[in-house]
Image 1 (cartoon, rainbow, N blue to C red):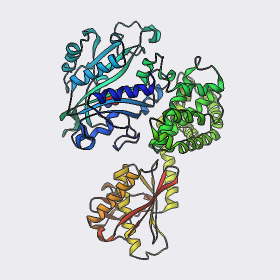
Image 2 (tube, helix red, strand yellow; image 1 turned 45 degrees about the vertical axis):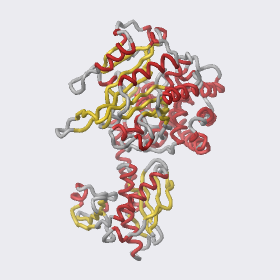
Image 3 (spheres, rainbow, N blue to C red; image 1 turned 60 degrees about the horizontal axis):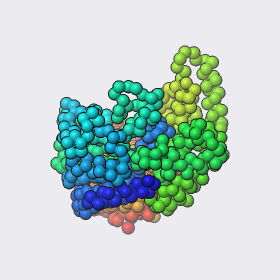
Length: 608
Ligand code: SER
């Protein structure tokens, strides 16, 4: 079965069982508590907790998807037979519709009749229970009595393996029942003979292919500061099948890298160095995984930077480039690979085709940039290793944080890359010391940035007219709105106002979506229409900070500062002046959102 056929089989099957097919959501989740989409359920979080009505929004309470996912935590396992950064997850979901029995029956029917997997190779796990959540006797009974699985092929595991979620500390979650596939003893490293070898054995023989999660709890912080699991009002189903894993099984390949989704990329790499894949698959696999992930991240609007999502993209691109060196590939090897990825996926994910030029130019830019420093950086690293080998004796040899920081700062080596290089040589990095060096350096550059941009710099030395004052208050509203829409990690990097418009620069690693721009504009206008009072207070600088006032230009502030608060929406240390009530501002309009420099976005807005 081809990859195209597998996606279709899955979605057709669930459609025939009354499910509505919903497209994959972006890798950039609407839920700001997570960095990237890591599971199919993420776009449905609000439906699980009853905040939104699936019937109203989708016309159905049963849904099936093929969802783009990206898991940073698996990055170091990439190149084994079952982990990827980017991957596709096939899932069926029920919001207060069917529950355990149907979910288990659907999964079994699909695997054994549609995919025709040998039932004797399928093994089951269920949640063993703990002091907070009871053992899943119900699921066990269904497997035993309705499906007819023999007792010895059902194993029980704890929270780590058989309880899913919540994604970010709190939220919908529940016990799960997993289906594992037995690849046979030839897949087992060292031909494992452990008596308990079975699902979750690390030998590699068994692979988890489908996780059926019975989402019936909401994990929340209780009054006493501990988490508690409250029963959700509704019982839901969230399942996730590993598309790449199942594909490898269906195509009878050792891993997804030999299936139709990856093999064209592997072959493209092999064009330059013919025939090494069988001998040394690791670099090929890492490059193939990372270039695929990079194309999808860029298609969803991410650009390389040193922050959050942009940093993840930079990290995988630079790691792929470094592995290109290991294989002695030409310095521009990534572009033909990116083209293969786009070609292979654009019919399923049109954003890859639409963003083709952008994807190629972003990768080209990063490749050129890193190529300039990689060679020198590797030499520097080699020197460092020799020096430390002479200076340090004993088993563990440590690269100092300062040295790792130099590689980061002057040669563009992400810390994880240096760590990986160090590990290959049997060295470790003093990461704590590296973080300290990073923070120290950031303080220096922040001071530099502050000097350059000033506060809400107002052009001309005098406040000229009312419009400027209105734009000034609008800037405070915009600042808070951006933090609410994009997340509190955004930082003001500069501000400038003239009679025509305001200009606001802030740290953020990607283009804002049209929807985010609209949400921001709407939020500012909402605060204007609430006609909030703008209050001015003098207080000690320390007090202002304790109260949560935003301040970016610390060293310039005197001990006593002026704080402007707008309702309870905004609080900033600022010299003013401002309007008295937000209603005076008029209608706020964002006219442009663009890049200002790497990792910094710029908004221009006006008032009417
Ligand atoms: N949310 C579960 C998972 O990611 C099932 O979809 O495994």
